[in-house]
Length: 391
Ligand SMILES: *Cc1c(COP(=O)(O)O)cnc(C)c1O
Image 1 (spheres, rainbow, N blue to C red):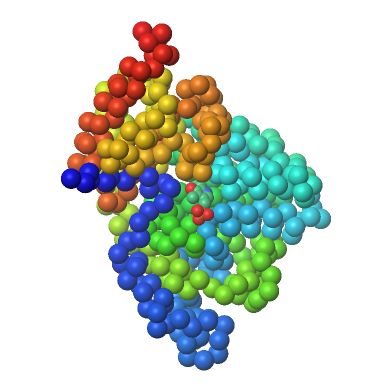
Image 2 (image 1 turned 60 degrees about the vertical axis):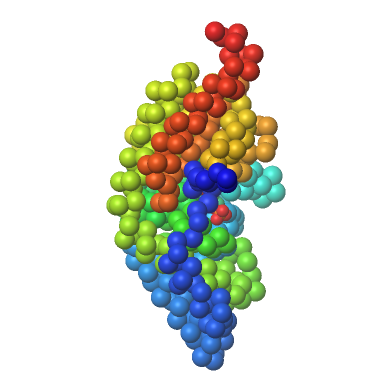
């Protein structure tokens, strides 16, 4: 008999909502026009993009012309860093970010340091993963052109004080960007309340399609394009629009808006049951991230003295899909930069697991996981010399 598969990796990606697939279908088939074409095929596609842009803008209290569609979260992050640095070259070349950002921010910052002469300050976080807004304030210089702090962390789920940092940035006259890929659709996002000038999002993290995302660009904020060669997106991003992707993204945003409260209540109940269940049944285990300021769907734990990779393989054999650290860092032997940044000893950082819940998880999935994981950890610990020495 095939074992039932259970997915606990919604922070890596999500399955498309059936209504998203349905909304996209016509744009993959008969409504295939190029939005730049004058004929009716083009007009039909263009109208669909306009409508999708209006819907998405309204849900985050932005203006339609402030939304620039991109190929995903990574492109939005690259776009804002490169585009603001170039547009603001006369003012300076200093960027402030923090040590727990997604690689799409951190590696782009490293690239800008190496190849574009940028100066980057990486603000450390506390042991729950929080950035202190006062640390940001102290790091601002006359040369600072951009501050970038993520809305919530993809590995440990910590939610950062974005509105407060945004206020500091605004008072200092410095642009502020947040990578909201993990919160878009899950938390209530209002670009006015958050005090942001730029914000990144990605559809495939909220039951939309892969390969489509956006950068919110506050009206008047200065940024130069990454892609040249067409008039699309008000000349901010050349290339024929991903029409089915944009339509699907908009549908996913609408569904998230409608179902948010119900989804989150269920997620928080499952999350808290899972955290308590793991901490109660597996000794020498710690929870990583902030106990309260936490994404509704994130569980990140370290059952010490067992390899994360071994736990993942054993969980997979039992039908459970989870992750160590982030999907991007699995496969490498380096412990996650986020766990390092919150001060976890590299030896035990290797023992960390991330379970990220989603709309298709059930209470029964959680019960099953709570039955399977303690057994796997026990078996692996029995083979662990480190654990035996400890006893
Ligand atoms: C997934 C993710 C990204 C990358 O988004 P893609 O659309 O996959 O390129 C960026 N930042 C965070 C926080 C993410 O979780």
